[in-house]
Length: 290
Length: 106
Length: 172
Image 1: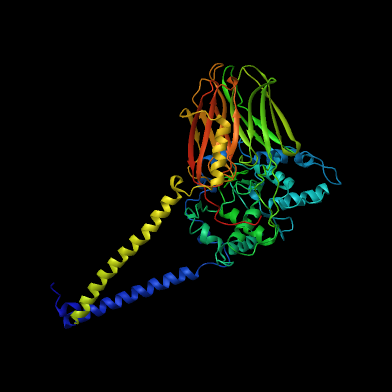
Image 2: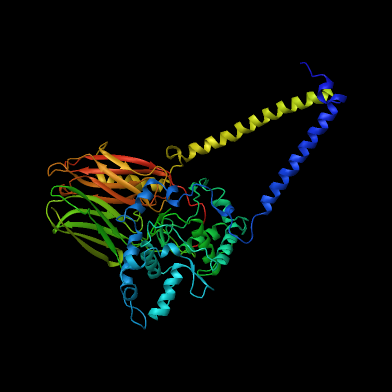
């Protein structure tokens, strides 16, 4: 084997010296500029405004795309979608008089297909005072207590899920369109922080699975992008219809984090952020998911 | 409470073979599960399904715990005349639900 | 220049590449074994009691008569989204006339705690022998459909499905 001559391994000849120094200087300048730009971009992760880096990766896909053919067919066919049983119950409850005011939803809102069109696509939203963020279930309960003077329905109760499914169904096909005005911004930011925050025994953030690893598999199940376009939905794992909050609580437990109580601000803010992240995607309520 | 749903195609011609889809609300508790303290949860399922076309039984099924919750059944029926399609679900603990839909055959 | 150092670097690069190759091959072997273990054909056999129950279920249906393979097409997803609800359909090649029709379709599992799933009873008024439902699958296994014809003969078809557990455990 012929080894290169020692001279070639490091040039120390005088004629190379000025060129070598210039090159090194140029390289140093490039590196400095690059580092400066890189650090600036890194530190520019904004604390205030909702900036572009919160946009999900290009090519947003609904959880629908990650399911098998048969599960998709279940969602597409109203005759086969078990959530329709809840929806039909919701339709019946819509017309039933309730509370001290002895009023039905229909008495004020008439035909839900007209009055509730697009409503679910706008929730969560701040209440009239702007101080509290409400999801759809909380808005239904607020209407029950304020206008029907009836007791609020329990979270995850059959009746509340049925009404939320019925109202949600009236937005099917419409784009998710939660408000991002000045009133919503603090809630949205809180939700965004929660999504990106590492937590729990596994020190995992939502973003690590659903932004960084969506499309890959976790123990045989596909990891979806986590767009809540189909809620309330029929989950095969639950063998029943459940809300987004139920799913979020399950995910928190699954990642060995402390779960949040139903109706807590933390959960509703996260719901808002997830819906904002899914903005423009069509509503699928009532969906079917594994 | 909407206990069951029967679906037929919208337009039916005489002599056409149509698909009937039947969905019922039921947990279909298998009897193989236990509570967290180890107490067995007793079986509670829909065991029988029958479909009658103008009073005559055309299709039936016997269900076991392996049928998924909120049982779904789809089967074919030869559309011979207009009338009523009636489906009946019966099961453990006296469970009984009957649902009917009109069938309009052109 | 230290020529020995150069030889050392070259030798260590070769050693590294060889070691890496060995490691990759070593990792590949258990992965290949795991692959074959998860395919239905090679998954662990069920306990004796489950096997016996399945044989008894088939006997109850056929009364000991011979079962012919064919005419029955059982469709299942190859990889199920969730074992709690697996869509299945059975189609039987039959004229469904008054003299020649499918009397019953029995669905039997291989590894569920109980082998019987459902028995569909058809009549010529069905027009077509095509049934669908959703079932529970406890594990990766083969599902069997035995069809009883009006002439007393039995025909069967089967399909395999792979079932995995949900990745994250949930509160009940």
